[in-house]
Length: 130
Image 1 (cartoon, helix red, strand yellow):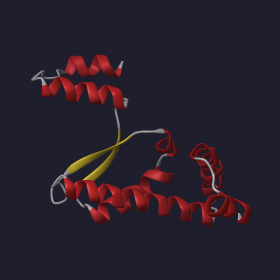
Image 2 (cartoon, rainbow, N blue to C red; image 1 turned 180 degrees about the horizontal axis):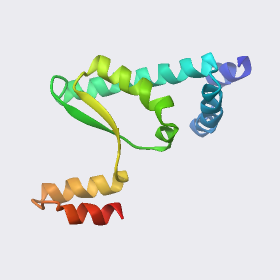
Image 3 (cartoon, helix red, strand yellow; image 1 turned 45 degrees about the vertical axis):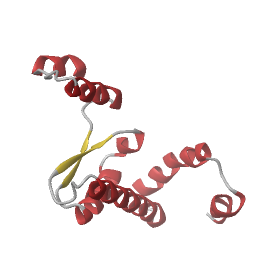
Image 4 (cartoon, helix red, strand yellow; image 1 turned 180 degrees about the vertical axis):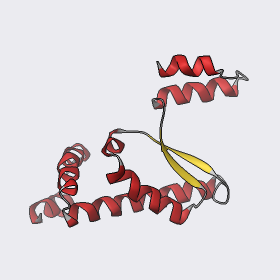
């Protein structure tokens, strides 16, 4: 751990190198390693602070909204989603994190079509999910 902390905070480490450590972190957390679990909770707390900032900037902090969870980190299920849900709801009570049903590119395409006045039908959405 000391070697990793030195590389992170003193010597510097490339983002790709940090990302490569994620599977080790999640494996350790699944074995109830307290440091790994604390790192996940701290990370999800930081994520929740970002969600809070965006919700306030968009004037959505007092209403209800959904937070689409995309990306490989959420494949770890409740190990990550549970702490994130708790941290987000403590800051933005009306915000509900949910796993995205479609890839981000599909979501962007849907929003673009909607901005052009296209109404997405159930059949269109089903085709995207297939």
